[in-house]
Length: 286
Image 1 (cartoon, one colour):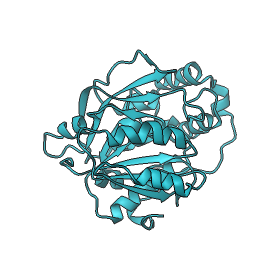
Image 2: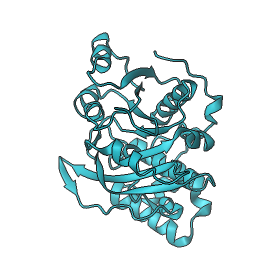
Image 3: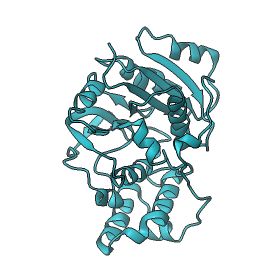
């Protein structure tokens, strides 16, 4: 039984086949209500024929589509590849994103779809618990969505609990390609500033973020996290108050072991950018 409104699942993956096949994809295929399609975008080494068969031979009713990233290398380009493909296929419902190392509870999709009870709701955010070494870490549920919170940090809206309509994602230009990390905060800011956005919350935990996965973009002092912080500062620094600026740098050092001077004095690589999804040219199954 598929969901109403229509839901497409989007997974970007990079060289983590074991987690994709043992954790993230099985949690999608075990959903109490199945999505219309599951789109997996590979941003890493080519899938083997055996892996392709394994990924697409599920007993689930949901169609599994495999794509290669045809945009800028990185998770943002991979997500945009999937969004453009779904747009070209005529999907205009919700996009439910899942990182390849995270997992959903059995009723995640149903809980999010059920929250779309009022006309015009186009963003739903449910509780994303945090786990380290398999142990859940204390974390409060989001109580509201305020753009100022995302200038400082992230109160709990990340990739794996993103549930947004594709037309709204298209309206804000999709993901900012070249931004190696902090994609969630950048997208949240652009969505919350869009006058079309109407959001709702699911006030319970429905998904798990595994923060300690090797090669995770959230690992302390990782090159991706440093690059993301530098570019986020470059883009949004002029909007921060003195207090917000202090909290931004304090959080970066506390959580990611990256002090202020490495962010503001570091070398900036090429500029991240985002374009309207209507401009993206992505073919079907690769």
